[in-house]
Image (cartoon, rainbow, N blue to C red; front, side):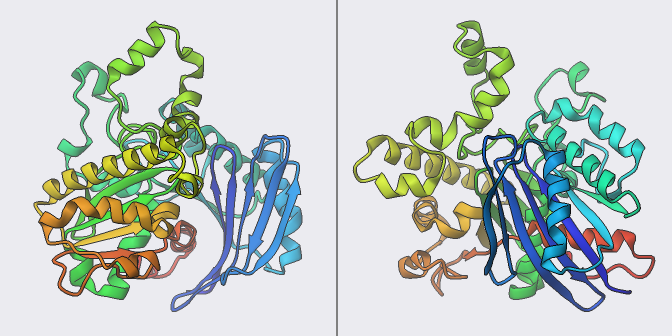
Length: 403
């Protein structure tokens, strides 16, 4: 297999992450990572780093929309001397019920994905705009869609069903999808690499805790269940999303006109979670810094960790035990306070954490005698996108090591 030179684009509602990888049969060479932030706001920001984390660029830039951001990125890429691009891989959060793997982007696929936009208004339209803008810029390159929901298609039917009338769920797309699948796919492959096949194929719970937060229960490297369901606003309490809510709460807010129906998505994605409970910030670092003097900040942290611990316990029940717990994502990788609070209620599983190892964000934070191995692992969605894209465009034997 000849080397593929893959540009990855990971579009959020107001951001665009990108990376550049060289992928060959026996090697993977990251060359560049970057992010365009605050797209659509008064002042955006452009950051680029080397794979080792060295800052190449960190500057303010006006980014009125995703199409502008893509074209602006194209103009800047030559300055990083990355050479020719072979293909472009895109992260698509919502793939609907029928997409179980990466796919070549075609006009037919784009039409189908546009029809799915009501399933995820905050994310999918922005992602599709970014894909179309990139295809405009690079019309002769192959573009590959990598779906965050694909990883969860292995869940048993009982884990995908919603308790609604069949007339609403049959052939309508109303189901539990699960998200963060690209992150889970990377982590389970990396776990197999560093801890061996037995560990990866055992009973594993991965906690992807970041601005968006979810957990997934895996057995034999496949997803058995996950906390996010129909939308990325569900499941765990998050930075600015509420997680699971009594549906009566939404009905009450609408009926009493405390929230307008047209503002509901923005309310659920931007005003709740850590931000709403603390009244201060959606960034856990800000809350940790003031928790000793700000009762609301401490309460928000307590609620976040309590709900995460409760969800983790439910996934233990799904798996009938757990052998490995992996913390990943911005909070999972860096917030030792959150990890210790979540693990504190799991001593009945024989789980023991070493406080010093946890505070230092070491790779293994459990004791040698702990019956559950607790790991801290850095995720890499961009690398998974690059791998999938290289496989799909290659006419030769697919690369190994994804699972």
